Image (tube, rainbow, N blue to C red; front, side, top):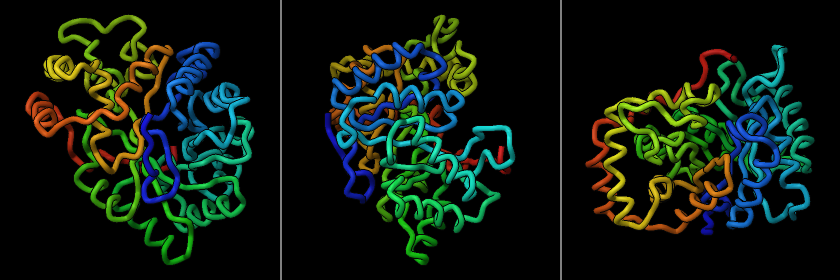
Length: 332
């Protein structure tokens, strides 16, 4: 396993991290989840990402039990706050009340005294940014949170948060967690240039595009039973890629992967890691062998000609529009 700094901070993270969105507490049984976590540990992954909202808070609890007994100092545990975790009007968003209550609940579920990174899961238009950042700063001072970050924020939102933190003396954002893959490159135009200037690292999710970049989905055919595309919890997001023009071009990546001695999944994960602003790529799994396959992308270097071949194949199906990074217009 290779390690990288999280943004410009001193924190080192495994360049491939393990995430449990759509798996722990929902798609897979707990024994299988624990086997996947153990496989991640065995392969040298030290960074684990979750969120309070995943599987209705169950994912955090499963991860906490799976990591029980592992030396805490050898791990980097990340979680998030924003989406609803209850029925009440204050069980959501980035208010001082919800952040404070949410971190305490997350720590209980994760069975830890602190998280290494606490992330604003989306931008909250109904809470003053100063209130959110002051609350995050208080959690750092209390020792419950070591670093703070955001997820799916626009360049303008990140820039404003950094400006306020500098003016008020708050702890600065060190990371952003966006969707990023060969097919989804919306951060490259605005978010990445700003982040490079300001020392913010990307912890990218869905580097395999919900499994589409494995090549297992074939044009003109029904998706395999038990795959993400057939799961009620994951099929909505993957639907944007389940089009014949996309699936046909993805199939054309297979010779490139074969020439490099990589699986399609390894090629996809290695591709996002070529971006120097990426601190870590999150992979998920329903089986331990998926973890073992994905981690082989660590340390892989892709030459300029390989990157050009990939661009030539994918061409017009790549999404680059920065306006696709959005948060809800009102609290959900």
